Length: 148
Image (tube, one colour):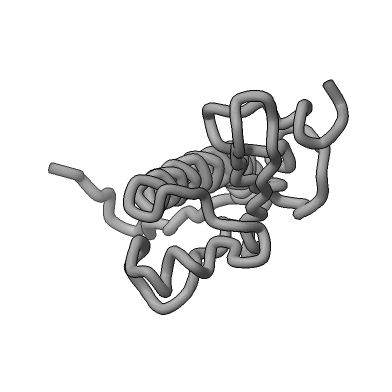
């Protein structure tokens, strides 16, 4: 219980400008740290999504090969997977950055082989981190792009 002395007024005391600025700086620092973390997680999620989509495309291509006895040609591309109902949907999915997946074939000593390529956030061959290239797990991308 507070006791008031007669004749004294209680004065409501607020925060000083310096105290408010300090709180705002602390909030801004915490917000920026959280923002950086969230952006990193979004990048990781996009890479993970691209890897999952490539695996799905690989599975559809393998199924096409089992049923048709051949790989899709480069001219047919991934679109043949939609037409043959090996992929669900009305169109071939784009990568998480909005670019189309690249499908290539080549003939080697072992026969015809294929690769599905995603060029990452920049949509161009090469690059690091978020712009790193991804491809079918059974292939070495450098061998296909002439870098290895």
